[in-house]
Image 1 (cartoon, rainbow, N blue to C red):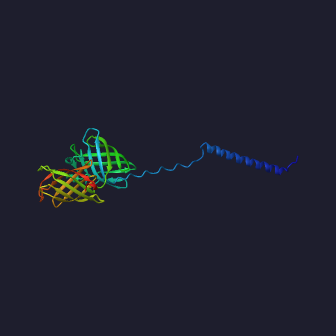
Image 2: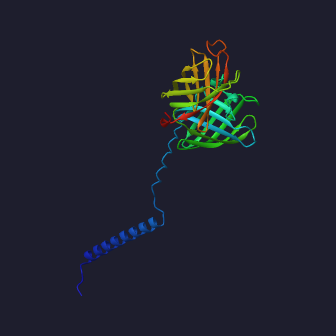
Image 3: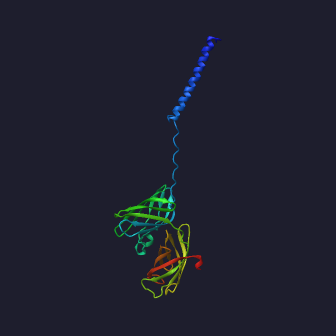
Length: 279
């Protein structure tokens, strides 16, 4: 047997021990890592949900849980960041009845809905006069695209559900009939209304009237309010307000008592949208 010098034997033993120590440390690291004892990076934050976009012309419907009348609301929403605001010309109409409308365009106080949006969550408040007294309605819900839905509570002890949907511009032609409530005619006059809407919800147009004993045409200007609209002819001192009803619009009209034509006359009518193929 060949004997190595004593110094070389000692050095070899030290090298073997160092290699063994490295292996032990490596195996320990694997065991610790496998048991979840090692440090891990925190999960990335969930991406923020963008706020829903609630702008343009909207129809809202509130349905009572307590058997009260349905409330129809017509407005135009604007949105700045998370804040949403309805038009000052907003109309609130019980049972979609023209005679039960509140709002500036109905000759009453200005009604302006307001609220906030947080992701898909929406909260809105609207204040308006009612038969039971001043009513403040608080609506909470969610947005799915341009449609909204949720629940509401109000300050006169009513609760219920609500829904809202966006509507298109009102440019187009409408035809139908109307009749005076103050002086009914045996044959109802016919009316053809042509409207153009701009990006600010303003309306301009004309009305051609047949079979009326006092007026044959109107030059109109006004505003779209959701799918409802309000029009005036300042020269003839006439006012017309219309609410959607299915594919038609129910409207009321009145002439000022000082009007040069049809003075003091008022009444109701119905018009339907004309398609291009109706011409």
